[in-house]
Image 1: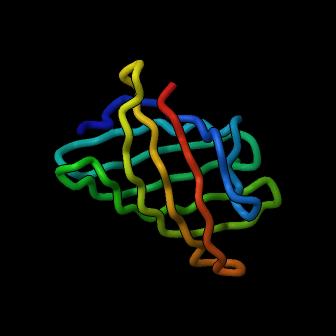
Image 2: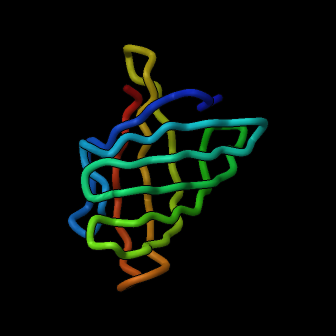
Length: 111
């Protein structure tokens, strides 16, 4: 699976998450290395870097500046599903490595 030049939007998130339906992720992939810039909603600016396995699962680390001016960091594992329209949906399990270090789940979909 290749995520290069695909854009995603959050469609579901845990209460303790900061991304929402206004947050847009722009994915780039070279080989098995994935990067993304993202922003929107509560996110002023964010970046992630990760590794994609042969099944399209992503192991990533992220950091972002939120609308409160805080630098937040975390880890995330994403599992892909191909929708009937051919777009990708990612099921994400994440945990903050800053702040209260809580965890959560989110779903993002290709737009």
